[in-house]
Amino acid sequence: MPSSLGRLKITIEPLNESCVIRARGELDRSTADGLRAALDAARADGVTTLLDLSAVSFIDSAGLRVLLRTARAVDAHHSRCFIVRASSVVRRLVEVSGTTSRLPLVAPPRSERIATLTTAAQHFAG
Image (cartoon, rainbow, N blue to C red; front, side, top):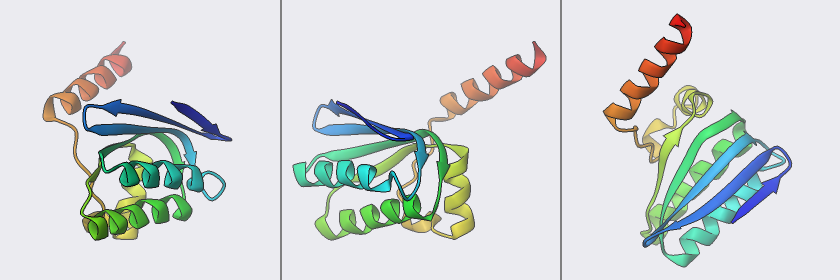
């Protein structure tokens, strides 16, 4: 079920007893409420949420607030939400804001990192 909010596209895909929420584009003050609503709905459904932010090209403090709010709500309601893929801009904001320990960032499997590095190396070599 895709939804587009200006510069942010959100896709929600059921996966067994969980769901994958994918965000693509810019996560900022004008689009953060859309992601918050999708995350709140998944938590209300009681499913484990896998949040894919690999295609987020921009994130500001409003986007970070949504992620932190979700992490607090997950803890309070004993539900499960993991950021399974974060783009470099998301990882950078989390690092510089000092919130790494408060967000459920999950690193991609080593094989995926190696494949990405190999693809990038081939791109620059070719």
